[in-house]
Length: 193
Image (cartoon, rainbow, N blue to C red; front, top):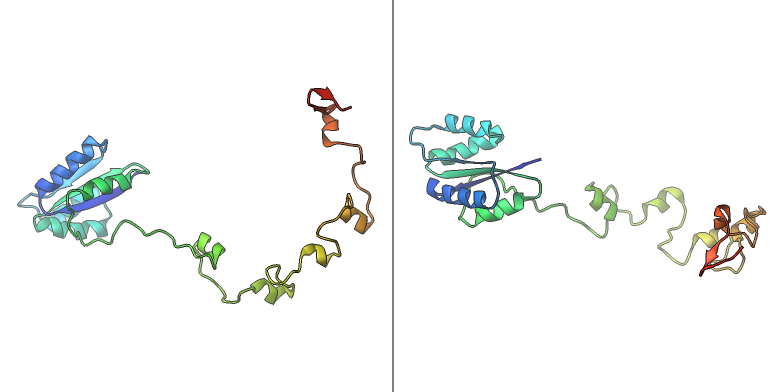
């Protein structure tokens, strides 16, 4: 989907030179405005709307065109808008009265990674909100682990500690390997079956 980039220049001649550099660099869908002595703001607004500039932006840009400035409107393909802005920036664009199109982008905060990633407001200032509602101590504080909570060691020599703790048999025997369902296991060129 194309992105529309508009840049205002002091004169139509500068706008023409900027448009030519865009053409040389492969931008075909572009329009140059300005320099018409008899054009009024409403006429420019209509012309800009016909090339898919939003009406509110077109009204602001039309005031600059009536004052004798030149304007380049380019519809850059996805991923090329930044390049178009760089090329237009070489020709000394002037303030067009529109807010800056280059967004600073989302800000990331290490203290609130989920809210930052999803660009959502932080709902609480409590450091460990899950503790408040669940009464379960935080894994981040102290040396508490899930293994401690269900009375299992963190490291164990037992083959199936969970199955043994709850008194359930394991699903496989000691000599069985998952690849046995596909035939004998071949390791290093010889069969292990």
